[in-house]
Length: 243
Figure (tube, rainbow, N blue to C red):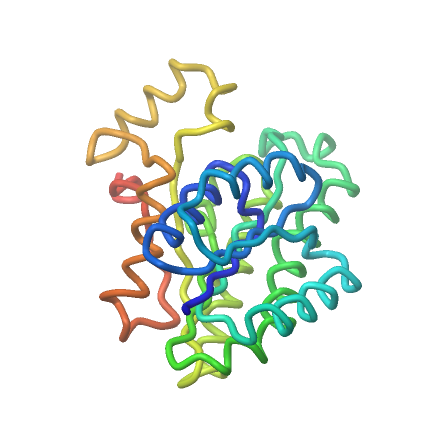
């Protein structure tokens, strides 16, 4: 049985990824930070299989060790790790005082350190697979420098750098790829001014914003067809950076 671990799996993008992998026959492990009910509800919607949820914030070394023990006992190996967990907060880029040291640390700890820590903890199980893949969820803001705040953009650029570095050193046993969405319709965009969102649509060559399934389909394609790809940054943005 193939296994996939999706961090932050109960969110909008994470849920779509979990469903996609479960429908494709994977045993899915969903980690969550604080909302156990949301994770449990997602688990109930998945097709029948050997799925599980686990409380494992990627910044908590003790919880990562518990997760490692759990995977070792229940599954023995991992085929796919999707580092989807991440945080941000909206702060205008010219408001340097508005981006507090506390938020800078939280964003970097979760998005950068946490991503690396999860890879480090899961590496022994990925090495037991014959088709191991790590997907880091990045953002086109890593390249554009336009996003919810300055440090969020920097954190995604750091994730892309981690992807390139680890793709080199973990090959040939483990492939590492960044999937880099632009705007993705979901919980976050529900609170955005509709006129602003329409402006973003107008600036997108393919004429719409991404949805969570677009991201999930891209990740699944990396396991089924793009099997000679590693170290790449794959945009899912409708051509947004072309304009």
